[in-house]
Image 1: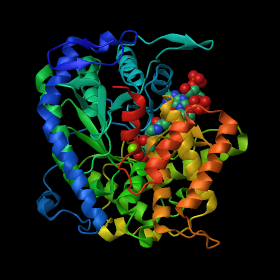
Image 2: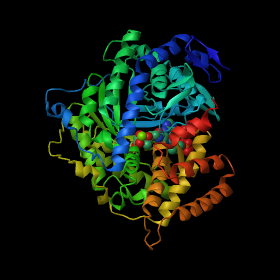
Image 3: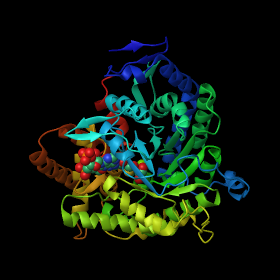
Image 4: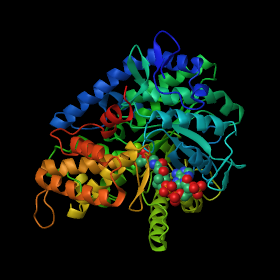
Length: 532
Ligand SMILES: CC(=O)SCCNC(=O)CCNC(=O)[C@H](O)C(C)(C)COP(=O)(O)OP(=O)(O)OC[C@H]1O[C@@H](n2cnc3c(N)ncnc32)[C@H](O)[C@@H]1OP(=O)(O)O
Ligand SMILES: O=CC(=O)O
Ligand SMILES: [Mg+2]
């Protein structure tokens, strides 16, 4: 049912139970104000992204650190804001979607921080987006007790600090429109959360904290900073109450880490090494650059290959030089009911967290409550009695453009298992996403939008380059389509039809077409998650 709050802004999504508590006239007007102020700049920055990608694709613009912002990098005098209440100790951060049960479980998981995710882990259906806001609203007010499956869910005495992750600048929310035009999804997720909860959070001794995803430049960070300034001003929230941790998960942002912190310095809390989108971004931007840029099977692109290590080393040293927290990324292994697989997963996660702690990160991410102790132990071992290791400046680190871009150092190979695995996982994940679940356990790994993007981009890159498998077979379009049909049939036999036909269509379009679309989620959202 469509309803109209003002002459310009229209909430066109269906009215779910209690949605009116989130979509109040004042909250919707707040979104309209943000959109009015920032929609134009957002469009310009998205245009700039497109142009930059075209230049990178053509090889016209090699990536390097920006000469025009050298003064920011060379100025030793600036630091980011001090850690805000509830963010002093970030040794374990759990991530996950904002459904009701996971909200309670994440807050009670023992992690210091919960990344409440409207992004990689969330399929952005209207019900998930507004339902997620309701769950956060209730959780913050401690009004979320319920029982399910014979189990009682209530928030305990020492919940994690909430850090909300709005959707990225590239996405729109079609169910809220201004003059018929869909509103920025980032502004909807940020705006609704901030409008309803900023004051409550501050009164409860924490604050309005955010993770900012998929930034491609420091100018996008500047836009976020301007959004924060206006939001605080409009609602009379003290300037500097917001804290933002930026995911460095695009190859272009890796060249602007310091500039991103500088733009957000009065609100910046840290940077996160978002490894999955980072790999996706590398593949996407260099997919057409020939064999030197072809990455091996996804499983072989680990955090210890030289170009990934260069990225994390640069991130830690950049953060600590500026007083910002460096937060590690997501190991994809998750607990399993099978004891052997479970032991392997725990060991893999332990190694990942020990490496991060040893490198100087101040904390890291886990995808599941069962992994909180492993991460906690790895960091506590290194932190000793300290809440962070900001004092480790990592002056020893020196990373060049070539270190970040030399993907050939990954070594490894492309195998039939790797190609089929990517096809299979992408289909299963897209099927799950279309059914409203944005993070899924597939073959004992956590899969979400970022990992699915890698899967479909790799297939595109291998086909485009006619990459050879170990036995000399080239990955041709015909071979990829034949394997797609076989994998699809196998999944169908196991899971039934579900949304597999639609998943296939999305896969064909985003992995087997002539051009490589920037995101699989944008087209899929427009076509399948909304009929507006
Ligand atoms: C690239 C990136 O951006 S990474 C960050 C984005 N991705 C994520 O956040 C993924 C988060 N993780 C998840 O969504 C889930 O852990 C999955 C989908 C991978 C696995 O979920 P499940 O199959 O339900 O796991 P499992 O059955 O072992 O869950 C056991 C319990 O833990 C809970 N749980 C599992 N993961 C989480 C989580 N991340 N947060 C809170 N609770 C969780 C389940 O709700 C379940 O609770 P219950 O015992 O009360 O019923
Ligand atoms: O958001 C995190 C990532 O790895 O992508
Ligand atoms: Mg990501």
